[in-house]
Length: 192
Image 1 (tube, rainbow, N blue to C red):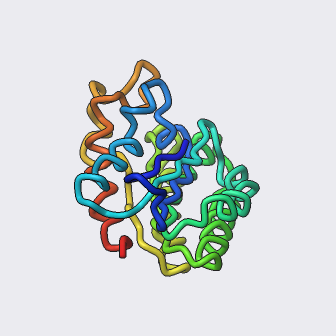
Image 2: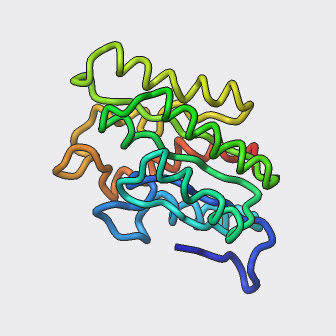
């Protein structure tokens, strides 16, 4: 999904590279946080287009396999990397997830893009050791690769079931503005 701002295509673009949480799973695309980001950029008269290359079910390994093509296609000024939740939910090795995210970031930076890494948390039923290590992984990767970090995409409402679909994993349309309010302060400094 690609949105261009204004009459002509914007010279600068933001690539949202994520999973179902950014792909507007179970709701109208126009109501997802990425579409709301487009509206916000227009309101604030920021000359950025937004490309949403998010795929429901995507893991960090899947993202790694796709990143070079996405970078070549969209030539983004900013990349928002929102991957890892599916690695965690599948109990995949966290070392591999961190390596995949690191390589995605390296490729994005090499292309000239500024990067925002978006973190996630897991439900407690995965055990305290794995859950804690998963949560900490995003900060470790952001620090190692010197990129901006949003520690938890769903902060402030993750514990409120009314903001989630029946599966209790995917946010409702009503939660999407809340997600954008988490993303925006972390993204804004990267918009030049």
